[in-house]
Image (tube, rainbow, N blue to C red; front, side):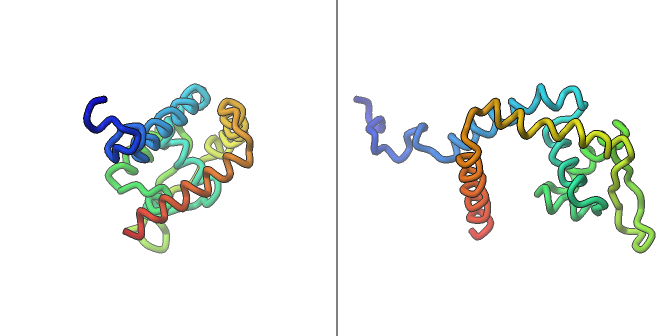
Length: 149
């Protein structure tokens, strides 16, 4: 056996949480691609639309906080959503420094199509809904733990 290949090796690739999360993230996001393609959305755009469907209107700052994205990443994403006709970006009437993001009628209509995505993903994963709920809770705790450091 080569050095560092024992089951107790702390550097064994298949023992790394970061590796498992990276592979799982790419695989799950990959499942979304064919479902989002007919909507003209990328996965990050879909997340922005989810936030807007739930909390509209939002300032760019509020949306960035919800999605945990910096303005440099969020701005081009919002420009693309605007070009698709799903959102409008307007200066706030109460504070000219604030850019408000609202859904267009087309962006609101898109929600009906998007509602088909979560059950399709759940079916594709083939996992028990309770297991998915437990996984979500564990990941939420993991995210919180990274913020506490």
